[in-house]
Amino acid sequence: MSEGAHHLSHRGLISSSAPGDLGAPVDAIIVPSARYEVSLREAARLAAELKCVLLVLSSKSSKARDVADFLRDVEAEVIAVDFPEEPVAKLPVLETSTILNKSRLRRRTDTSAKRNLGLVFARMAGWKRVVFLDDDIVVPDANDLRRAVALLGACDAVGLRIDGFPDNSVVCHANRDTGALQDTFLGGGAMAVAADRIDSFFPEIYNEDWFFLVDDTTLRPVGQAGLALQKAYDPYANPERARDEEFGDVLAEGLFALFDDGGKIGDATLGYWKGFLEARLALINTIKQRCGTDPDREPMRTSLVAASGRLQIITPKDCVVYIGAWQRDREAWRRFIRGIRPIRRTDDPIAEALKRLKLERVSPSDQPPSTPAPGGRRAVLTGAG
Image 1 (cartoon, rainbow, N blue to C red):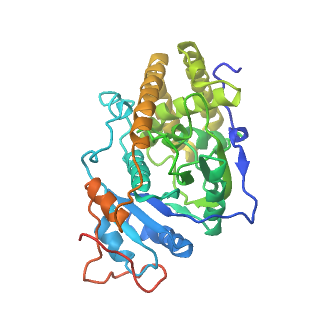
Image 2: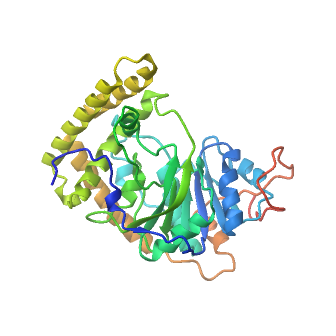
Image 3: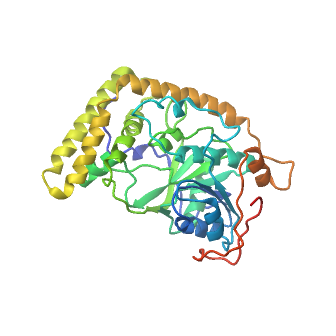
């Protein structure tokens, strides 16, 4: 077993891929939306083609009212909800969401909380096969989502191969951009999930989707099918991005390096993390050296300095303590999610799920949107306005 080595690829952990002709119905697409409503054009197109529900959980620049207005003419059922600022009723308070509150290692984002809410909503609504889709992802062929969910009989989760712009951390982008062979892995930005049985949650940390794919000891059965395209962005535009990612990237890369070598979570001891942190710093320093003095790479160098600065305040104990909290949260979430049963005693389980979770479904306003939505003749948007 390697002692703390950075692995350029974890592709060997993927257990299944789908034959081209295999397919199954998609129950819902769930989008944790933070961008303006026009970014949902792709998700709406897919929902219309697949004849499935589109659940949009909005925050930041995404507003449920604007989403409902923009998508009013989509031929799919759209559930537009403003994600609440306060903790959602009935969901457990997770230790991993509070343990870093007073630490510089905390990463402030609501993506994980939105996805967790999506998992709970799916259970209540009786959805078995759902797809998480980020609002900066394009899926050229809607049938790829059918192919992905078809694998959920053998896998707990199935990711689409994300092409276009690579789905990596800042450090891994820099590794590739300076000449190394850096791979990508499955990501929550385009992932089919067996919502009726999976008992994982997304912790509030970078690489939350990798943690979601892990069971008590190692990686769950996961597959890959289809193609998604990540829209381009500049990973070096703000060095704060590299700082925010570093703790989660260390933990996820460290655990998955263990899994690659046949190890288990229990093998991630203080000694293991000491070696991995040393190897991580050596990796970043090597990438810095490969940057050279090219002025065009100054933003990359600045981001790498930010990452190494954050890395040097991370201790082996930090890693062990967080993993312990995550394992306790996994057990708490498992008990919670297994207690949720599909809502049967009503003709409208979606409305009942919204009521139980104290969420308000937003209907389109009387004023038509200035920008036409993608495809279709009318929206199927009902409920509280």
